[in-house]
Length: 89
Image 1 (cartoon, rainbow, N blue to C red):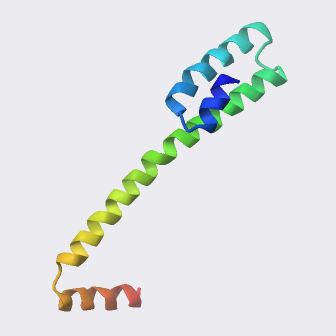
Image 2 (cartoon, rainbow, N blue to C red):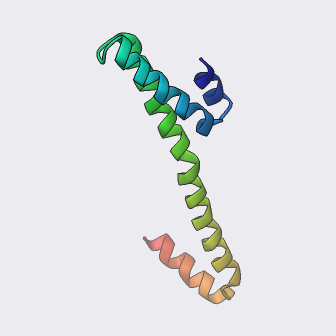
């Protein structure tokens, strides 16, 4: 439950070790195919997907900023030609 609270607060690095430990305990005590074990495994998978999203968006935003900086630096005539090519494609 603490791991899920951390997850809801966006504290993924705090939640992940708790879910990993809970999964190991459930597998050991309840078995691999128990419904509770499956739920904990699914929660861990969801958490790991969520924790990767900020990195993905950070990279995309960085790339967008590089493009915007390049556009601001380009002379207007070059920018106009680039816009025409983009519109054609």
